[in-house]
Length: 525
Image (cartoon, rainbow, N blue to C red; front, side):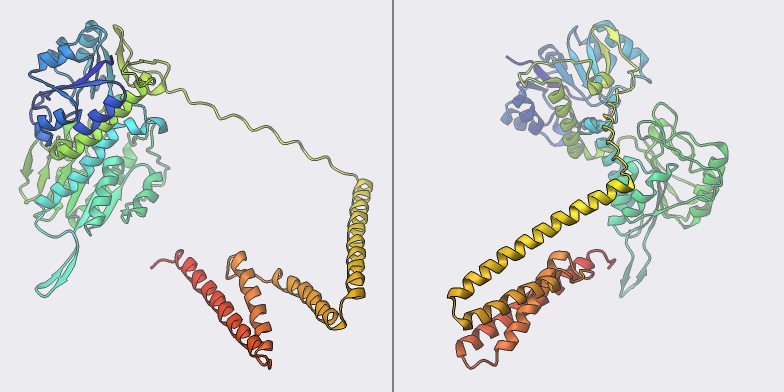
């Protein structure tokens, strides 16, 4: 019988997400696990206890019963001290943990002998993208930030011309183009706003512009590449920061909505939207600070609160944007958990195989068998096998080149002479028995084949693909031959010639129409 995986109700105030949904439970059962959930755990996210029961999940009353029954506990928020006390040696906890900021919890988990997998520590490598819960939640936060901004903004996002007057489009500035920033850019542009975006990493400029936003460039002479290991931004130099703030001060009076997402893991959020910038914004403007949990990017941000500045600018510092879309966030997070369990269950037999040689599992594990395993070693990057060096072609001497050319010429001559001899013999054989009228038509046919081959294969395909160029050339020859036969006295020949002209014309016109559509694909509308 497989192990049991359970999900308790979250204790953190206001947290509506749940780590297991009925759909993810069905997938976990296919891996061989029995699923357990605490009564009411999914209620705030829209998943009733009956929905869990219908999916084959056992619903238990109270957290104590769940922790006692489950071998693997899946949570959203970092565990409370009381929750860690319920763990036993050999049990596995999977949740956000933030080990760098929660040293006491780390030591407590080690003392309990539990294995802890921190979803926030999943390494950012290609193979682990399906388990990247941080990106899943950041994507939701970026989307929700724009929706929250629209809820607090008193005008349309898109511009309109109505009988009552002209409405200008809103101008949105997104600071930071990580996962949350890109999600916010996509949502704002889709709503019709004029969107600007800034990031210290110059390589994201193309991503931003490809989504319909305008990248904010700085006039900064010294090269500044803000990219750091793991896809995050690195701290900026003081000179770069001054240029950055000067640019933001220049933009502030024009911007209606500012969404800040700049955050470096393990650090306090950098202050990028200062009090004087808020003061220069128009009344009714909105600032959404997605970094509020780490102090905020805006000077006036108050975590978990919405305030209004003296000049009428609304600053939103909520720290629970994913939880405000609990159903969607739970679905994505539970999928991340399910993928993690898939890697932990290679045999699909309901048994956890905690392979510490696996880069993803090792990177996410913070305690294992009574030892702290944080911080993890850097992921092992498999070296690309070096291509075998190609053997250098032997340099031929002038005498060898001449000998090679002479041999090739002789071989080609022999081949052509052989073909001519065989062709001549076949023609003589046919001529000995065939009537003279047939031979006259046959010779014309052979000559037409030679000429047609030379004409068709020398057609330039500058306006067509090679295939269309050749088929159009063939169709042209067909039309030419058919037109010569239209004047024939035989009605059957006239009908066949007319049909040939029609079909060949359709082919030629169709070729040009297809080519036009292909060229239109590469033109901006």
